Length: 418
Image (cartoon, rainbow, N blue to C red; front, top):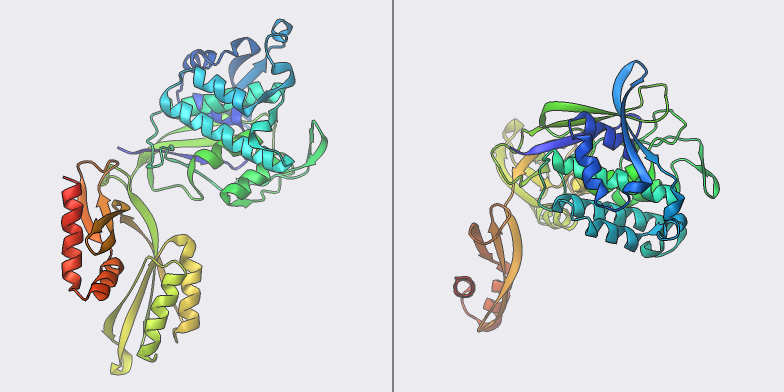
């Protein structure tokens, strides 16, 4: 079963809200503490969990209480903060579960890239000041440990199958090391920009999304927006620090993914299908329409002959594209055809993993598209196709049949891959 999670963030997200939601879902605090202790910063903080009320609703609050222990100042560089390379070393030394390690490193790297961009410095030079460093390490590594402990499935990029709602912008100002700053603070805005996050205003003028919270979701979330089709098994509630007009609670839904039930590797993607029927267009225009649609990113375009009203022969024109290319494709249809309306639907398609390899035959190089099922290529190759254009070019150049070039390319590929 594919295990997925959805973060619903009506009042935003912070690192400690993530921890609260995970503990609420059953991640043992002892496990988090013991594993975080391997980072070698155990003497600098304590984890404290409490149940709190937020506008009459109960949720779990995880506090990272910092211990100001002056004995360690001379042996640690922590009184002047830590930089990314040092934090990476701390994480790598701890021998965390492999997914938690990889995810934690990615989140810190993303946070450092954003902070660096804000200040105009290299990510390696970003300085996580004393309080921020310990807090951020515990929040980020703790969240990655929790997601791993819950057994959330990984997608084909190795990231958790974690989805996240659109994020509230917040507003007003917040006090920081450099004085007052507008909310969202620059690092959060940069992270949103890096990931093209959907945001909305819920009218609350407070800091709702913290840099740590933003770094976690922009690095680990597969997609932003509506919840994926899922069967909800459990919901975790993580409390934020302040009281707001609506309950300051992050809700983490945990469940099984329903649309992948027949596809254990989760190689499903969402596509948009546009279709329109046309009976008053010069057929010559259609060739141009096809080219224009492929130019703006259509995955496939096809026509079917149909009979229309007043007994006119017409065509049904169908375009398959990724959701982000839907508007440009629709624009081409309105601009280049006589249609007055275009229907659209969203569908799931199961896809094979694929890559382009190339083979050398006596006439030249031919690219070959290799497709397979599952995560690994080794034993499950289901489709091998030489590229049409490459075969056509060699066939024309040497005046040999296209089928001969295609056969040679296939033969060569199979010889190399026995």
